[in-house]
Length: 252
Figure 1 (cartoon, one colour):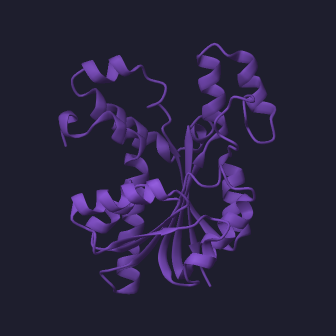
Figure 2 (cartoon, helix red, strand yellow):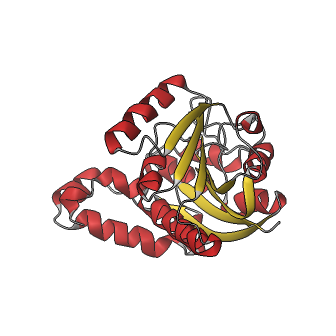
């Protein structure tokens, strides 16, 4: 894929999408079913739901925002997958009030744990919706990435505040209520009874590289993506990633 067909914004989701697609393919082989049931909690306007549906899977998107669900409806119609995607208003805390237990092969919980009152409860609800052998895809804000970004911007006191704050916040103006390390996310997944699988750092470099370097240099977007993919699985880089992605599998 050329740089012109891969916008820079896709760097923010490319690593997660590749890992998720591989997980979906593994579940197809394991279940013997070409069509999986996928739950995207906090799925918004369908950034992941639409490409998952394009693979032929059924997707239920749960989101608290009516506006996001309206955007989802429009997006799936434009993508020609309206018959495979349905939107439901709800949130992670009341997830089991709007979806069935043990009903999904894969559950996506992306950008949710930062905002819920009880992250452990949010993960537990997502796990309860999974079938045996199902996979949880968990994506959340990384502590180290925020500290590094504030320091590189010259906000050293804010960087130190985020480093020492229990929630990983750099101050009252911080728009993110909570951040995680790879270890704390893995503990949440393991504590919910899942076997912790792959852990990836996401947006390790993409948020730090000046846009002018990426947008003006031929081949820069593709090269940066390859770098992100190469570093994503290395534990040394998890500590500075803007986001962290963890896969968990439900054994029973």
